[in-house]
Image (cartoon, rainbow, N blue to C red; front, side):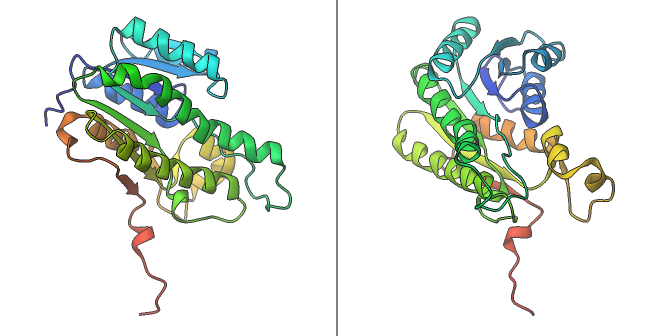
Length: 248
């Protein structure tokens, strides 16, 4: 399928590893010139070596001035901006009860996962409005609709991200900018392995998808071939959230 992406541009956050890295590679393979944003300069430099003609940008998404400058630099160096993919995210405390979660830990999760998305989109909108057909894709999680114990901040932040995508799609209706979210279940990434341990993936009792599989969904949503898809969250969870607890 021709995804009609050759010659377009995109800004990918959280591009130094995991789904962000996989998305950068997948977009580049479709002829997209990408700006890669991450706060980890060393890891980002390694990804840039894998992506032809990539524009690396080091910035902290929790700092609005830094985001404003980073997005501006991306637009200047790319010459235009057709898409934004927000992959940056953190887990926060895993296995901790709400009583044992500090305000600082709660705020840190929302600062990256939700406020970071808000800031990137806010400062990218002028450039996206100038594009012929623009797309925003936010990386959420199935934790937006189902919950695991000990992950309240993460679950709440991903639910907020899903609703942010929906609200943005309504606010931007008629602008030519589509906004969607992708909500995968467990993905084999460095962050997931850090949370669950390598042994959980070696003998997983649950289905696991690769970062490249998630990136394929993102690329389709970025593409103009999905122009009718707007305000939607694509849940990729092997059908788990569709199952009833009814004993029949």
